[in-house]
Image (cartoon, rainbow over all chains, first blue to last red; front, side, top):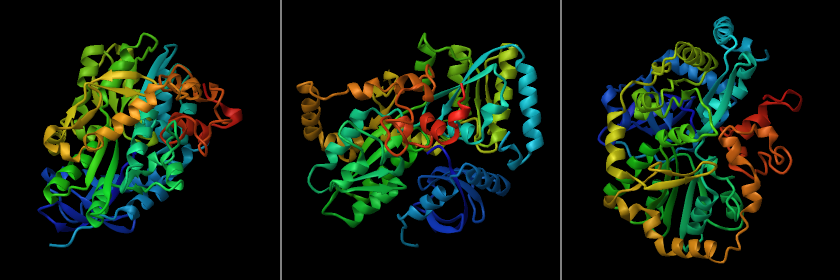
Length: 93
Length: 380
């Protein structure tokens, strides 16, 4: 649970409720971005995701490093399964 | 060294390890890595093999399922037995044993227990099943608490009446203090949890450095991160400094996340105390929902049921806690015993059939030992 999964913000789905669609290792899922709303989040930005919530903005380089670390830790499949498991999608605005 | 060439920057890793070694010299330092994610990474990467004998790593209480008392697991399962309840839990929780079994075993016996990856999934289930009472079994440190808090806020906004949370969120500083206050434990410094710090900020650890004169290095999770953090720590220890340093500043800022701080303060308040497996009761070390959100508090909603469960459990003294209390999980959690020194390790207690929670999660030190430290290559 301490590890976070990197994802790339593709589009904002509901800005008022802070939901965005992210690409997480090829899995497209909605995530909540409320916690980092003050970090000036934009489409194309990379974020670290915990239990469906973006916890921090990171650079693309850091995201790729984190993906590699997850792979070496043997957590890549589990991370993908977590992303695939998010099912709380909200309706688009 | 088995894995080092697979890493990015193998040369830098070797150089950092050499630097740690020469700096440590004849000194001996006991370093606690608080976070279970770090424990997992240290074993998976075989980092102990790169460190000099003078550094002893103690695996701290930073794995949420590992420190959860079995009584709390049973209480969650007692709620799951109530009519029309759907209990939702994180995957890490599924195999955590209570005295009466694990959520997975109870699911096999017919209870409606579902694994979720996010508290928002539990909320979604509640929205889709107005005839069910959906309870989310919330665990975790400051990293996951804001997610639970925001979910409760959403539930309130949506006006849901069939969603509640069994809150087991804990905070990271009080157990660090408890460890330092324990005369059996001699810790020289900490590798601090990185992702907790995305919420509380690296500055959140300052009171440890200030009050106990122990350095804390907030660290990332890659091999080089952990080694660099240890190098920073050893440099401080050698010069007698005790500061918080942020090795993970590419992700963690010094200040707390303002949104997280705001929602946590609104939704949660500190419990007077909370029981930690292995560490005992620690004052102000966990949270519960505030009065404003009591309609979403499973401990309020199921108060009668829980009171009955607790009185049956404690009343006649028939519950046999001995087998489990004999399992020296507490000693392992406090670093007084290495996992493989436990008589149950690898025999009665395995990741498939865990007796103690340290064997359940990949972040538990017993599971890490079991998975990565071979019989012939026992560390410590």
